Length: 295
Length: 308
Image 1: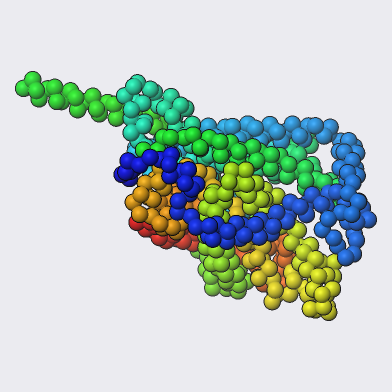
Image 2: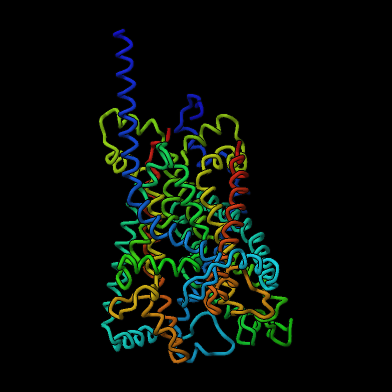
């Protein structure tokens, strides 16, 4: 930490919230953010608007962004279609929930443990291994599809939820993210815990993890987003084991008659990642205000 | 003599302690390493091996040496087009997207609390919405039902609709635009989380030590603190910028007119899944992989100098 002159802190804070900010600069930045935000939010508004349009408005010319007579018909139709599916629709939902929850929880634990030792200790092959993880992010997923399938067959995992869950545990992006964040934790903190007789597992669970909460909230977002949208039709082919995304996409592909339902599907699929996202964002904001560990 | 023995014993103890420490490290790493090697490294190595074979998925791979690579570089004109397109896309969307995501994350970080959450959600929206880029295929539709065409015709700027997504003149600009719009992704979110972790006391100390405006603060305090996330964001940007394919296929079709929006990964997809020449596709993947590693090394070296 840089040297700090003895200065009554409370006094300065009461003067102004942030000392190095000009009001003009703030204004320009706010304007820019607002303008960009309008562009960015467009897809969400569009998706939502489309799902609320009655059939005649979906094909209207000239096209309008917002529905004139918003209705929930599309969602109601979707429920009817779902009710007619060969496998009860709840099955698809529970399959996806299982994959998402187990996959994300396991990924968080497995990747964080590995990231912890890679970030804070130096042992033979640690650097090489980490480099391998980063490099693995860059290999095109299209060509590894077939070798990956062969590996899953050899392990007898094809057509089980594990064929999606187990690879998700070791997704390189999670380890990379966690390691980058854990590097910021001062070594002195870990050593003092060590002197006090804490085991590595305890240091990991009680010191390291609480201090990188923004990191694992971010990891959860990435993981949920990926797994919730997993189609997995190449590795899971029993109808009763298929995922929600896959089933909903079948409805979506129903052609022109299902344009309204397709829009409803898009909204429903977005809801879970967005909810998780909003939840974890507020969590990040709350936790970090109180963290005082930086040395 | 007694002293010497005591010293020896202590050395032995530290050695034993270190060995134990090492084992704990390996134990922590073990679950990830096992799964990672099985599901990521093994398929990757197999793919690289396929790149030296003729492999049509039905028959066993047949070793053909470097033939795939030689064909790719010397004979495949379409590959060269795809390389050109990929480089244009990567050079524009990579750096611009990366810098924009950092700047926006940084700006957002200074908003009042309640606004901050909302802003992060809005900026990340294109990424959450999954395949939201499909709405651009409605905006840029070639007939007058497209939002942009219908607007331009009504206003009177054009009197016939423009084929935004099928006319080679417009395809690349449209693709680049959509990609920029989508660039607040993985890196952006990591930056937002990282900025929250920067110790506030450092800013106060900086103020006392003579930091006078936000840009100085950014360069001397924020950026050095953010270096690990900057490295992470760079890798993510490089990977995303070089493997563009889904978006061009969704927008401009596959294959696109005159291959004007053909990228390296589209080419790979073409050979792997329409022509069933996995060996050739693997060769493309391997070359792309090497390019990305090279770029990554360059960028990492650059980023190491930031803020020093």
